[in-house]
Image 1 (cartoon, rainbow, N blue to C red):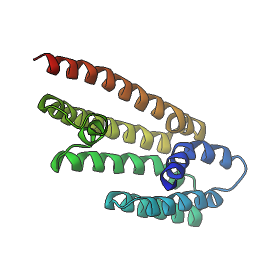
Image 2: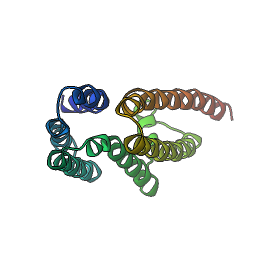
Image 3: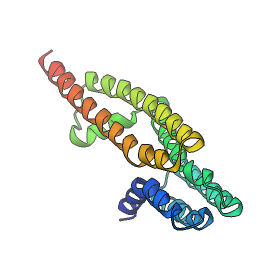
Length: 180
C-alpha cells in the first residue's frame, strides 16, 4: 500500500506543486515534499532511496526557510538521480535492473536476453541522465507552468514511449533468440 501511495504522490507531485503555488506560499508546500520524503523512507529498504529521501528533506527545509519555489522544483531531479544510481549500480553488480524486471515474467531468460537487458539498462541510464538534465533546466529556467508540463506530463510520456519501444524490440530479440 505504501508503494502505491508513494508512486501516486511522486507522479502527481509536479501538478500538485503547480496548482498549490497558485493558492499557497512555497513554504507550506514544503510539507508535501517532507511527507513524500517520509513515505519514501518508510516504503524502501534501499540506501539509494534513503539518500533521495534525505535530499528531499533538505529541499523541503530549504523551501520552508527561504519560502522559495526552486527547491520544490528540484525534486524530479532527485528522483532521476536516484533511478540513475539504482540502474547504474545494477550494471556494476548484476543482474541488471532490466534483467530483474524481465525475469518476473520470464524466469528462464536465455543468455541473449541477459545481454539484451544489460544494454537496455544502459539505455535507461542515459534516459535518466537526459531526463534529469531537462528536469533541472525546467526548474532553473522555465516558468512554473513549463516545469509542471514537462515534469508532470511530458517526462511520463517519454518514459512510456521508451518502455513501449523497448518492449517491442525485446519481443523481436526473444523471437530471434528462440529460432537460433
